[in-house]
Image (cartoon, rainbow, N blue to C red; front, side, top):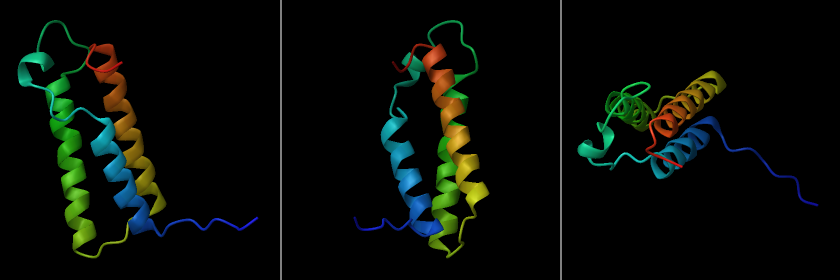
Length: 92
């Protein structure tokens, strides 16, 4: 059985960013984001996560190589945002 190699950190970050952009509903209309009591402001959380992704996209473009901790931090942030969106009824 061939041994799978891990992607380099930059490729892994690109893949993580792409996966987050697919999974997280950034295109949710604002009216749907603010429709009652919330457990964390969905709009602000989405804006914050989008800003983080854009920042990393720029850093990668500039040649910065992320460390494992950077990948874990971004993954953890996206997981927390998704949990808040679930609590607010925006994702299943």
